[in-house]
Length: 279
Image: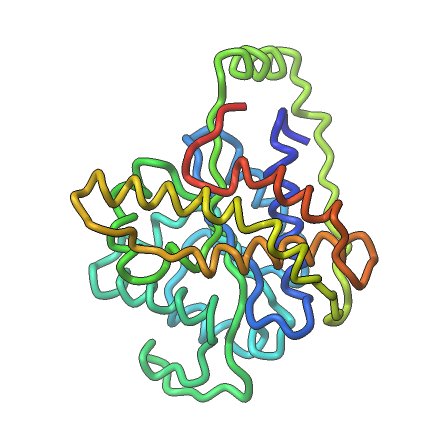
Protein backbone atom coordinates (compact mmCIF):
# COMPACT_ATOMS: atom_id res chain seq x y z
CA UNK A 1 0.00 0.00 0.00
CA UNK A 2 1.29 3.47 -0.88
CA UNK A 3 2.22 5.85 1.95
CA UNK A 4 -0.88 7.39 3.57
CA UNK A 5 -3.18 6.56 0.64
CA UNK A 6 -5.32 4.01 2.48
CA UNK A 7 -8.26 6.42 2.21
CA UNK A 8 -7.98 6.40 -1.60
CA UNK A 9 -7.94 2.62 -1.84
CA UNK A 10 -10.86 2.50 0.59
CA UNK A 11 -12.91 4.96 -1.48
CA UNK A 12 -12.19 2.99 -4.66
CA UNK A 13 -13.13 -0.34 -3.10
CA UNK A 14 -16.41 1.03 -1.73
CA UNK A 15 -17.24 2.56 -5.11
CA UNK A 16 -16.70 -0.86 -6.73
CA UNK A 17 -18.93 -2.57 -4.15
CA UNK A 18 -21.63 0.06 -4.72
CA UNK A 19 -22.22 -1.38 -8.19
CA UNK A 20 -23.74 -4.47 -6.53
CA UNK A 21 -26.39 -2.73 -4.39
CA UNK A 22 -29.77 -4.11 -5.41
CA UNK A 23 -32.37 -1.43 -6.03
CA UNK A 24 -29.90 1.44 -6.32
CA UNK A 25 -30.05 3.12 -9.72
CA UNK A 26 -26.37 4.00 -10.01
CA UNK A 27 -22.99 2.93 -8.75
CA UNK A 28 -20.82 5.55 -7.06
CA UNK A 29 -18.50 7.37 -9.46
CA UNK A 30 -15.24 8.97 -8.36
CA UNK A 31 -13.23 11.86 -9.76
CA UNK A 32 -9.77 11.55 -8.24
CA UNK A 33 -7.90 14.84 -8.23
CA UNK A 34 -4.35 15.45 -6.97
CA UNK A 35 -1.05 16.80 -8.26
CA UNK A 36 1.10 14.80 -10.66
CA UNK A 37 3.24 12.17 -8.87
CA UNK A 38 0.57 11.69 -6.19
CA UNK A 39 0.18 8.03 -7.21
CA UNK A 40 -3.43 8.36 -8.30
CA UNK A 41 -2.94 6.78 -11.74
CA UNK A 42 -0.80 3.96 -10.37
CA UNK A 43 -3.47 3.20 -7.78
CA UNK A 44 -6.32 2.89 -10.28
CA UNK A 45 -4.14 1.07 -12.81
CA UNK A 46 -4.21 -1.98 -10.54
CA UNK A 47 -7.92 -2.31 -11.27
CA UNK A 48 -7.27 -3.40 -14.87
CA UNK A 49 -6.85 -6.93 -13.48
CA UNK A 50 -10.51 -7.04 -12.42
CA UNK A 51 -13.13 -8.62 -14.69
CA UNK A 52 -15.87 -6.14 -13.75
CA UNK A 53 -13.71 -3.13 -14.65
CA UNK A 54 -13.00 -1.63 -18.06
CA UNK A 55 -9.64 0.15 -17.87
CA UNK A 56 -9.04 2.85 -20.47
CA UNK A 57 -6.08 5.16 -21.02
CA UNK A 58 -7.94 7.06 -23.74
CA UNK A 59 -11.50 6.73 -24.98
CA UNK A 60 -14.33 8.08 -27.09
CA UNK A 61 -18.03 7.42 -26.65
CA UNK A 62 -18.10 5.60 -30.00
CA UNK A 63 -15.21 3.31 -29.02
CA UNK A 64 -16.68 2.37 -25.65
CA UNK A 65 -20.15 1.62 -27.04
CA UNK A 66 -18.87 -0.23 -30.11
CA UNK A 67 -16.36 -2.46 -28.32
CA UNK A 68 -17.86 -2.82 -24.85
CA UNK A 69 -21.48 -1.64 -24.99
CA UNK A 70 -22.96 -5.15 -24.85
CA UNK A 71 -20.78 -6.19 -21.89
CA UNK A 72 -21.73 -3.07 -19.95
CA UNK A 73 -25.41 -3.57 -20.86
CA UNK A 74 -25.46 -7.07 -19.37
CA UNK A 75 -23.45 -5.77 -16.38
CA UNK A 76 -20.37 -7.89 -16.96
CA UNK A 77 -18.56 -4.53 -16.76
CA UNK A 78 -19.75 -2.27 -13.92
CA UNK A 79 -17.13 0.48 -13.75
CA UNK A 80 -15.09 2.37 -16.30
CA UNK A 81 -11.64 3.36 -15.05
CA UNK A 82 -9.76 6.14 -16.83
CA UNK A 83 -6.28 6.82 -15.46
CA UNK A 84 -6.13 10.27 -17.08
CA UNK A 85 -9.23 12.07 -18.32
CA UNK A 86 -7.34 14.69 -20.31
CA UNK A 87 -6.55 12.68 -23.50
CA UNK A 88 -10.27 12.05 -23.95
CA UNK A 89 -10.97 15.78 -23.65
CA UNK A 90 -8.01 16.98 -25.73
CA UNK A 91 -9.64 16.06 -29.01
CA UNK A 92 -11.62 18.51 -31.14
CA UNK A 93 -14.38 20.35 -29.29
CA UNK A 94 -17.29 18.36 -30.77
CA UNK A 95 -15.75 15.02 -29.77
CA UNK A 96 -14.85 16.12 -26.24
CA UNK A 97 -18.26 17.72 -25.56
CA UNK A 98 -19.94 14.52 -26.78
CA UNK A 99 -17.80 12.55 -24.34
CA UNK A 100 -19.07 14.65 -21.40
CA UNK A 101 -22.65 13.98 -22.47
CA UNK A 102 -21.80 10.30 -22.82
CA UNK A 103 -20.38 10.10 -19.28
CA UNK A 104 -23.44 11.91 -17.92
CA UNK A 105 -25.77 9.33 -19.47
CA UNK A 106 -23.52 6.38 -18.65
CA UNK A 107 -23.36 7.21 -14.93
CA UNK A 108 -27.04 8.13 -14.59
CA UNK A 109 -30.00 6.74 -16.53
CA UNK A 110 -27.88 4.78 -18.99
CA UNK A 111 -27.77 4.64 -22.80
CA UNK A 112 -30.30 2.60 -24.77
CA UNK A 113 -29.84 3.93 -28.30
CA UNK A 114 -26.40 5.03 -29.40
CA UNK A 115 -27.27 7.05 -32.51
CA UNK A 116 -26.08 10.21 -30.78
CA UNK A 117 -22.62 8.67 -30.62
CA UNK A 118 -22.38 7.77 -34.33
CA UNK A 119 -23.22 4.11 -33.72
CA UNK A 120 -26.68 3.08 -34.97
CA UNK A 121 -27.45 0.42 -32.40
CA UNK A 122 -30.08 -0.26 -29.74
CA UNK A 123 -29.12 -2.17 -26.60
CA UNK A 124 -31.38 -4.70 -24.86
CA UNK A 125 -30.73 -3.01 -21.49
CA UNK A 126 -29.34 0.46 -20.73
CA UNK A 127 -25.59 0.81 -20.97
CA UNK A 128 -24.93 2.01 -17.43
CA UNK A 129 -21.77 1.97 -15.31
CA UNK A 130 -19.87 3.82 -12.64
CA UNK A 131 -16.79 5.88 -13.43
CA UNK A 132 -13.44 6.12 -11.66
CA UNK A 133 -11.26 8.75 -13.30
CA UNK A 134 -8.14 10.78 -12.50
CA UNK A 135 -7.26 14.40 -13.21
CA UNK A 136 -4.83 17.04 -11.95
CA UNK A 137 -5.99 20.27 -10.23
CA UNK A 138 -4.99 22.65 -13.09
CA UNK A 139 -6.80 20.53 -15.66
CA UNK A 140 -9.89 20.32 -13.47
CA UNK A 141 -9.83 24.08 -12.86
CA UNK A 142 -9.84 24.66 -16.63
CA UNK A 143 -12.94 22.50 -17.09
CA UNK A 144 -14.78 22.61 -13.77
CA UNK A 145 -17.14 25.47 -14.61
CA UNK A 146 -18.26 23.87 -17.88
CA UNK A 147 -18.61 20.49 -16.19
CA UNK A 148 -20.77 21.96 -13.44
CA UNK A 149 -23.04 23.50 -16.08
CA UNK A 150 -23.20 20.22 -17.97
CA UNK A 151 -24.14 18.32 -14.80
CA UNK A 152 -21.01 16.18 -14.76
CA UNK A 153 -19.60 17.44 -11.45
CA UNK A 154 -22.76 16.48 -9.57
CA UNK A 155 -22.56 12.92 -10.91
CA UNK A 156 -19.08 12.20 -9.59
CA UNK A 157 -17.84 12.11 -6.02
CA UNK A 158 -14.58 14.08 -5.87
CA UNK A 159 -11.59 12.66 -4.02
CA UNK A 160 -8.72 15.08 -3.41
CA UNK A 161 -5.64 15.46 -1.23
CA UNK A 162 -2.22 17.11 -1.05
CA UNK A 163 1.02 16.20 0.70
CA UNK A 164 2.36 18.10 3.72
CA UNK A 165 6.12 18.73 3.90
CA UNK A 166 6.63 15.93 6.43
CA UNK A 167 4.82 13.47 4.17
CA UNK A 168 6.92 14.55 1.17
CA UNK A 169 10.08 13.87 3.21
CA UNK A 170 8.66 10.49 4.26
CA UNK A 171 7.94 9.56 0.65
CA UNK A 172 11.46 10.53 -0.45
CA UNK A 173 12.88 8.26 2.26
CA UNK A 174 10.51 5.49 1.12
CA UNK A 175 11.89 5.92 -2.43
CA UNK A 176 15.53 6.02 -1.32
CA UNK A 177 15.04 2.74 0.55
CA UNK A 178 13.31 1.34 -2.56
CA UNK A 179 10.47 0.06 -0.43
CA UNK A 180 8.12 0.56 -3.37
CA UNK A 181 9.36 -2.72 -4.88
CA UNK A 182 7.69 -4.58 -2.01
CA UNK A 183 4.23 -3.12 -2.61
CA UNK A 184 1.59 -5.79 -3.10
CA UNK A 185 -1.62 -5.56 -5.08
CA UNK A 186 -4.61 -6.85 -3.13
CA UNK A 187 -7.81 -6.67 -5.17
CA UNK A 188 -11.24 -6.63 -3.53
CA UNK A 189 -13.41 -9.73 -3.81
CA UNK A 190 -16.66 -8.40 -5.17
CA UNK A 191 -20.06 -10.16 -4.99
CA UNK A 192 -21.16 -12.32 -7.89
CA UNK A 193 -24.65 -10.84 -7.91
CA UNK A 194 -26.57 -7.84 -6.59
CA UNK A 195 -27.39 -7.80 -2.89
CA UNK A 196 -30.07 -5.98 -0.91
CA UNK A 197 -28.70 -3.73 1.83
CA UNK A 198 -31.05 -1.92 4.23
CA UNK A 199 -30.29 1.66 5.27
CA UNK A 200 -32.21 3.07 8.22
CA UNK A 201 -33.28 6.67 7.42
CA UNK A 202 -31.98 7.78 10.83
CA UNK A 203 -28.51 6.54 9.87
CA UNK A 204 -28.82 8.23 6.47
CA UNK A 205 -29.57 11.52 8.21
CA UNK A 206 -26.28 11.28 10.09
CA UNK A 207 -24.55 11.86 6.75
CA UNK A 208 -26.36 15.12 6.03
CA UNK A 209 -23.81 17.35 7.84
CA UNK A 210 -21.10 16.11 5.48
CA UNK A 211 -23.28 16.89 2.47
CA UNK A 212 -23.93 20.39 3.83
CA UNK A 213 -20.20 20.83 4.41
CA UNK A 214 -19.51 19.90 0.79
CA UNK A 215 -22.26 22.20 -0.41
CA UNK A 216 -20.71 25.10 1.51
CA UNK A 217 -17.65 24.76 -0.72
CA UNK A 218 -19.80 25.37 -3.79
CA UNK A 219 -21.59 28.27 -2.11
CA UNK A 220 -18.26 29.97 -1.39
CA UNK A 221 -17.07 29.26 -4.93
CA UNK A 222 -20.25 30.75 -6.40
CA UNK A 223 -19.90 33.88 -4.29
CA UNK A 224 -16.29 34.26 -5.42
CA UNK A 225 -17.57 34.16 -9.00
CA UNK A 226 -20.19 36.80 -8.27
CA UNK A 227 -23.15 34.41 -8.41
CA UNK A 228 -26.15 34.73 -6.12
CA UNK A 229 -26.44 31.00 -5.40
CA UNK A 230 -24.55 27.73 -5.76
CA UNK A 231 -24.73 25.59 -8.89
CA UNK A 232 -25.45 22.43 -6.90
CA UNK A 233 -28.03 21.40 -4.28
CA UNK A 234 -26.09 18.40 -3.00
CA UNK A 235 -28.79 15.77 -3.56
CA UNK A 236 -26.56 13.48 -5.61
CA UNK A 237 -23.70 13.88 -3.15
CA UNK A 238 -25.96 12.69 -0.31
CA UNK A 239 -27.04 9.68 -2.37
CA UNK A 240 -23.39 8.84 -3.04
CA UNK A 241 -22.51 8.98 0.66
CA UNK A 242 -25.45 6.73 1.47
CA UNK A 243 -24.39 4.26 -1.22
CA UNK A 244 -20.87 4.22 0.20
CA UNK A 245 -22.28 3.39 3.64
CA UNK A 246 -24.36 0.60 2.10
CA UNK A 247 -21.30 -0.61 0.19
CA UNK A 248 -19.39 -0.69 3.49
CA UNK A 249 -22.03 -3.01 4.95
CA UNK A 250 -21.96 -5.16 1.81
CA UNK A 251 -18.18 -5.40 1.96
CA UNK A 252 -18.48 -6.59 5.57
CA UNK A 253 -20.97 -9.28 4.52
CA UNK A 254 -23.99 -7.63 6.14
CA UNK A 255 -27.44 -6.87 4.73
CA UNK A 256 -27.98 -3.73 6.82
CA UNK A 257 -25.98 -0.58 7.49
CA UNK A 258 -24.67 -0.08 11.01
CA UNK A 259 -23.49 3.09 12.70
CA UNK A 260 -19.91 1.93 12.19
CA UNK A 261 -20.46 2.14 8.42
CA UNK A 262 -21.69 5.71 8.73
CA UNK A 263 -18.72 6.57 10.93
CA UNK A 264 -16.42 5.09 8.32
CA UNK A 265 -17.89 7.31 5.59
CA UNK A 266 -17.81 10.33 7.91
CA UNK A 267 -14.08 9.79 8.39
CA UNK A 268 -13.57 9.26 4.67
CA UNK A 269 -15.49 12.47 3.86
CA UNK A 270 -12.38 14.51 4.77
CA UNK A 271 -11.18 13.62 1.30
CA UNK A 272 -14.51 13.52 -0.57
CA UNK A 273 -14.27 17.12 -1.71
CA UNK A 274 -12.07 19.49 -3.67
CA UNK A 275 -10.41 21.02 -0.60
CA UNK A 276 -7.15 19.07 -1.13
CA UNK A 277 -6.85 18.00 2.50
CA UNK A 278 -3.20 17.71 3.55
CA UNK A 279 -1.89 14.34 4.70
